Length: 238
Image 1 (cartoon, rainbow, N blue to C red):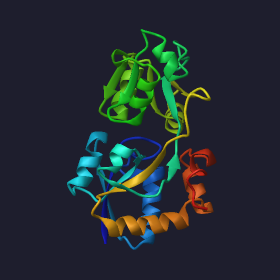
Image 2: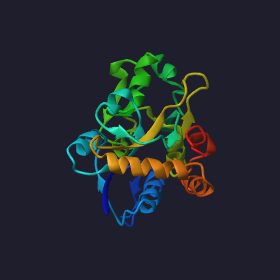
Image 3: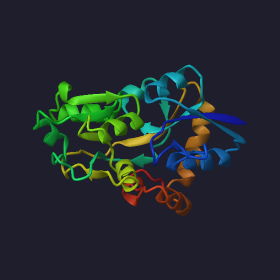
């Protein structure tokens, strides 16, 4: 049994290592779960964020790595049970020269520019906090956004707090901040997604996830990639 899974270049969740091996917290989670349900071959497909849902709907692959669950996305694909809950954060140049610590702090400065991957939930969060369209710069993927940040074309990149922590730890020119306490509501959840007609695979993955999430092995594997109990406990079945 072979399963084709699409992924993005977004450490620590999923990325292509220097040896061309596909790795990351969610890649490892998918591998453990799929092997447990009898999958013998896993084929990884690198794609862009904007192609994740269309590729699934068109049958180019069988499942996507976890992304945030929204009502709009759930109309197009079927989501698994949640696998993590993540708050937003900013990635900035070291020293945070414009003292950006929240979406509101960006809205308050006309000279602040915020980078966001097109189609992600961070865009709605920024807009709801008053960030104007002229302050937002959208990118196709995370590597493009980080390159723009390092080049000084944007002042902050909005993504997940845990992801930005890992990126900042790997690059001394960058630093990460979590959003100020109280700005966010309950952190949104992420899940694997499937073609809505692929009931058997979704059901099998969900059954295994319910057994595995929250286990000692799950926590140990996720901690290697920087995910803490904060990101896991609110969705763990155990």
